[in-house]
Image (cartoon, rainbow, N blue to C red; front, side):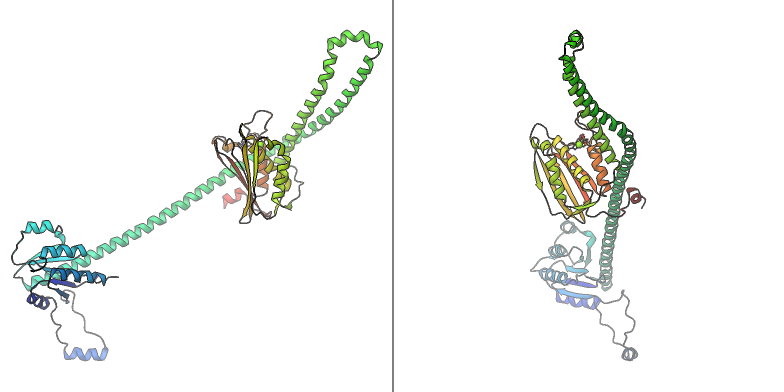
Length: 472
Ligand SMILES: Nc1ncnc2c1ncn2[C@@H]1O[C@H](COP(=O)(O)OP(=O)(O)OP(=O)(O)O)[C@@H](O)[C@H]1O
Ligand SMILES: [Mg+2]
């Protein structure tokens, strides 16, 4: 690290006598210590007060040709002890003249302050200034020169060098401080943005959770109300079917008897033959309708966690996925190839049949997302940081951006009536929430959709709710 105090001067002149003169002016011999000072130094080991900077000696180096001057400047830079200034003679045969020398010196060290010394000029001043376009670093000393003039020039220019250096250092440290401050502000800004994003995410989650919770209550109420009547409708329809079968048997038997003959016209009029054919199919459709209503009610109950009889179990996730794939096999067979990319997953504690239901909903949705073309469904699993995850990725239609925020809403469906109830994903969301896991979706139109479910390996006693997390 170079010091700011710099009294080093280089004299470049071909005349040895000039060097002697400069040395006398700039480096006068220190006066001999007085007897009193010598005794004092011997006793107390300290020097008398130093001479002030105004009269302090300079460190003078000599060069007799421009090339030698350049070599000295280069060496001084290598040693980290640059010259503050140089006195350069104008005419120095046989080598470079003063102007050329200065050009070289400045190329090596642009900070060097220079005094050009001349008695007469072969070159005009204008030409000199044109060649050396740095008047702020260049002064002229005309021979014969005055001692005081030389000392003052040395004093002023070495001080100027120091002040210039000091200013540069201050600017550097100011810039470094500004950089550091900017860096800190950027970091603070990034942290703030991340926090805002996190809060927005939590708020959205809270809204979703509240929405689902209120819908859940409604669903639980509706399910409860519908459950009873649907129960006796279902059982009555079954009984009615039996009764109708009996009645038709009775009618068949009656029609074989002669007593039925007079009723033939009425039979034709009432289209009893068609009725006998139609009633069983009507009964079948009714039963199917009631069965679907019962399933919806069951889904609603699951969604609102009315049935919490299920036991938590420690299970192999892969087993659950495999058995679910077997159940929905027929749904997939003609639509897509299923590829399993299973990673290493430890056993997880969960409500296994509900997790299977999530898998089923995701896989069936993936199959429904396929168009005419046969698609591909990839099921991936893995674990990290005390969590297990599985993904269901399809290369189907993808989900439009405006639809994406609504897919977890109960009864939201884009499927035709009878094909989807819109409960699959909301049920799945509820189940994953109950496990204190996460379900995320990534979708691109025309490329496909990936759902990822992340579950803790073990049921935690009481993870904070979103509301608690927000309040924290
Ligand atoms: N893999 C997917 N690819 C494209 N769209 C999807 C996918 N999964 C879900 N969706 C969209 O989200 C909507 C809601 O899905 P959800 O499973 O909740 O209901 P559904 O499949 O329509 O009916 P349900 O599952 O009750 O039979 C779907 O109608 C569909 O628009
Ligand atoms: Mg579905």
